[in-house]
Length: 95
Image 1: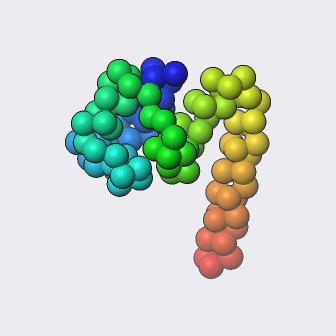
Image 2: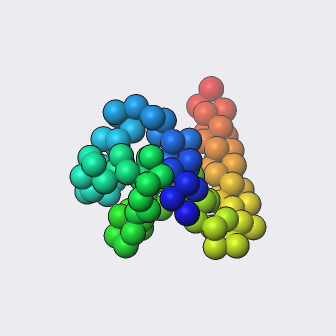
Image 3: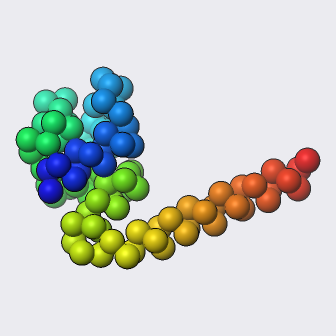
């Protein structure tokens, strides 16, 4: 699980110091704690995990896959496509 969450965070945020600061802001966790998550040596738990899922589609997807519910990722992706299409339609109307 630690590796899944680490990969998800790195895919979403990258490996920079800014990524650490962003995850700290999302969760209220310390810098050391977030660095452990990014290094896959510890797993976020409780409120930290919920906060990460709230802010990161990548982490949510990793949790769904780990729970054997990867099929639900499709509905998340479809919703994202829907939002992008609505944004595009709004831009076209303004043009």
